[in-house]
Image (tube, helix red, strand yellow):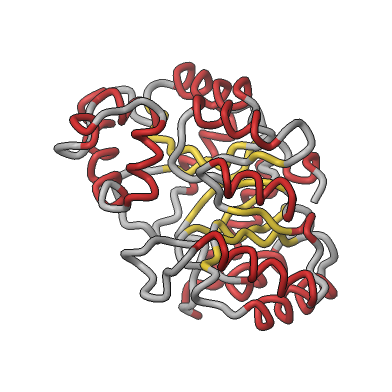
Amino acid sequence: MAKQNLGRHGIWSIGLRTEDPARHGEVAEAAAELEELGFGAIWLGGSTSVDHAAPLVEATSRITVATGIQSIWQHEAAETAARFRELDAAHPGRFLLGLGVSHAKLAEQYRRPYAAMVAYLDALDAAGVPADRRVLAALGPRMLRLSRDRAAGSHPYLVTPEHTAEARETLGTGALLAPELKVILEPDADRARSVARAHLAFYLGLPNYTNTFLRLGFTEPDLADGGSDRLIDAVYAWGDDDRIRARVDEFHAAGADHVALQVLDGREGDALPRKEWGRLAEVVGLVG
């Protein structure tokens, strides 16, 4: 998957992943609108799969659709490879397979995650899924090296520009680095941080993320009470247009090829913030 195929900005969304037939039309329309706005990729958030991506690929003509991230514990490699081949045959080059090991608290099968990912990639290789058509949800150095050597690169979630710089150093210049960044289009600090803390609470219970924060120099007090202002401001982009644009630019300056932007507005996760996506396209210079 060539870096230029993704462009510099994408949208990360749980709401675009649906199994409800009543929402298929709305979701397809929203995906087509994101393509028209100029975003280079749609990242399907949450517990997702190739099957969730297929309707969005079919509803669009150019934009890359990626799983961000498919858990290796929920979908067998042989099944994933078969679905990948089917989708790629119908729409060559339009799908990017994002894979991750999830979390011990969320997957009862969670054992030796690094070895499990290696075995999964071995199976995909044997089934003919090209390494350059997959990315890994890599946070630590070991998984980042694996994403460099066995995939197109990495799609880290809930990270900072400092993590992006470290990841780039590990990946080298050739591999794709596409971090996710949460955006709150709210200039009031108290309101923005309130939305952020409500969202962050779930992730503060997952050691994969909290250990990463500690490696980046945050402290245990930063992780308490929903997260310190310092932590919130590091992993959420909030404020007026200029401030948000500057935060996105920080990730690119740190070495990101592409930034997957997740808009948060305090609504449920399956909401489609289409008005905010349009505004965000203007903020990052895609339209306007």
